[in-house]
Length: 359
Image (cartoon, rainbow, N blue to C red; front, side):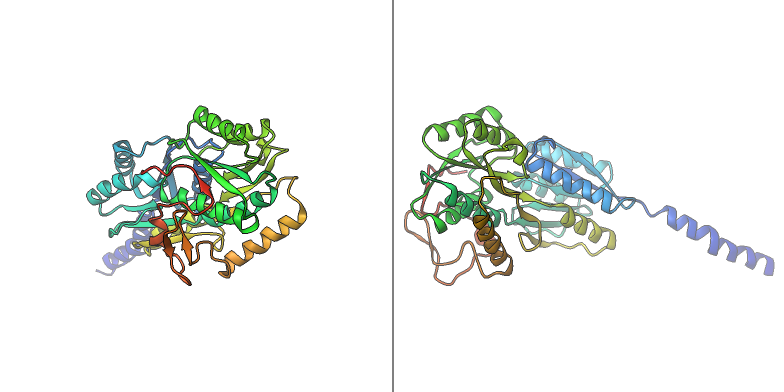
């Protein structure tokens, strides 16, 4: 009997721990990208966040990514394939993925989903919002100071709330330093379409604008069009100053890596839960891109001071009283926006020109 007990104890303290360690499998995380990851823009920034996760949590998190996924039933099929491959958390990195996400989330309650820029509540769904507009306001200050004609152009993809936030904040920044300036908006109705983007940009330039901003997933076409037409340009999503060495002013860029790593770590720790997160200038996820050589030092200091005020809360971009361009009150005096208000934005502020189609 003592011999049998000894053998049992050996098994417990040697074999069983080895078995348990072998069972600690790497968690797989899936990422859906609406466009190509080499676009130097939205999808590139998102993919850099994914790569940060792989490096930061090496050996713990394995990622799988699919690019050029339409915001349609195809997204549903891609997520199902990811889950079949073992994905336990999926990042849906574009506005239009929510509906497919909800369908897949209902079928797979054991899988966690991260949806960008949309509200919904499910036990296995967490949403996250990026306050891109904070950087857009700062870029607007630069544009307003640099414009000599008081005519600024803006090429935008879709009339969805995140882009309306960006356009309106940009216009508020412009007019905070140049009350005479206007922002003319042209819609492409495509996240990525180089031919349409070039045509829209050139059309604005031909109509007399001297600063060009945009909110398109892939920035290179518009940035190069501005440079070749000797027009100042404001970038979007990544720092693309190399494509406009002479006419680059600044832009808005993102750093998703630390946030995505924190979310994945919560899955590993077993602390992940449903809810809503905000990524902004204060958290460091939203950044101002580098200044171009044309931007004078006093303006750089002015923007840096405004950035600090946004970070510490003393400057609120959408602060009441706020009216739309038709004169309707959207925020009462003293009111500050919450995420739900921002997520429902469907108007233009004064100073923005162009049609506002229903999305």
